[in-house]
Image (cartoon, rainbow, N blue to C red; front, side, top):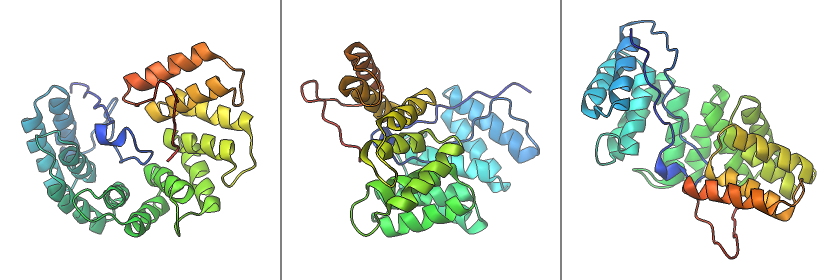
Length: 260
């Protein structure tokens, strides 16, 4: 069988947020176990080749055969606009069905939908509820999202101790957005002792692991201000340039930054 292609997991409406959707599973070196898996792999190949309608049909087929992987990817694609206009209502129908079946990825993505009001009314309460359910089942994205809610959400949901715990759990499991959160924690003393050295280490690690534009800009800021490292304006300018290429909007005069 032809080796399936990898889908770019980042979609534009997550670029400026620290919270993340659970992306479609990469299928490099993918070893299908049953018919639904084979159809899923074919669907991902079609989508990577730009044959999105056929890809959608195959995802729907695999989903009907009981593949949670296909269902979550189909929901993701509907919300991201892979198949035309974004369809948040259809995306929610699939997520809720998968949640009832126990899918942790669907629980995390339903939390994301509540946090950002995708097809329903924004609710941090319900976002936290579903993130916690997903994190209990091992969702790395849910751990990272909980970290950012508890650390950076003002009001009754702010809980630095719980936020740091979730950030460490997510980072230990490879979440680059959790690593970014830990960098901010050590820089600002959120739930941990202030440490510019540790802040720089975690931010650098986040960038190395592909955290994207927000972390790249943070790293530029660290170099510009000498936070945990020597001042290096050349490196700061280079990382700001890379962050801008990846979609981060930076004020060229003030270099303004909001960690939330």
